[in-house]
Image (cartoon, rainbow, N blue to C red; front, side, top):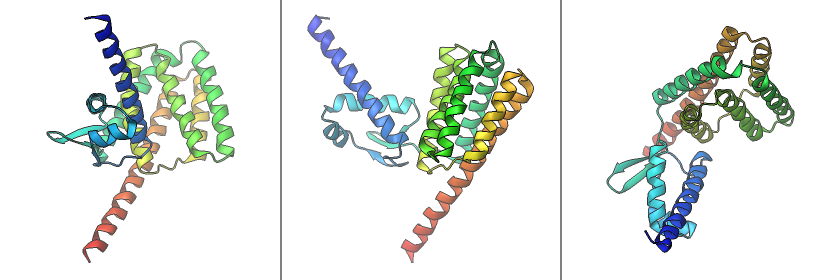
Length: 234
């Protein structure tokens, strides 16, 4: 491969990476809705790039589970079922439980970092800043998995929580902010005394409460959607 061809491929890879990041952010922030079609030409024009990197970006988003192929050449935003959400939370809980015993409770550095994050969460809770609180909540749980220093496990974890967070955005997920904060404080306390069993139980209960609330929100969204459909048919 000539230097010119190499630089051309490098530029294309960079454009594709940027397209993936832009589209992923748009999906996770709710700008695209489930089952909405992705049209390569329109996206390419909007981003001011050729269709080739957009096509490659969509292929990568399929690998992340955010896009699915409805039929040949027709790609839509994935819609996650209640069963799939339950499965995602099960995987999330298993990874976090493993990470607690294999990384988080070894030494005190992880507990210190989690304590700082919880302190920031308290500030945002008092401001009633839901978006920032949600970001810190995500960082808290990521820190637990990072403590294993297992990069492959962390990548798998991010793929799982990426889909959960997208669903939370779509349903305008409303955190039980005070209850959530108290649950995180409890986790810190148990982490400091290295009570693995109770800490695992606390993390599991926290995830299950979040899943329960998310399922309630999904049911409400479905009910409102069904109501609109009924009014249209009358």
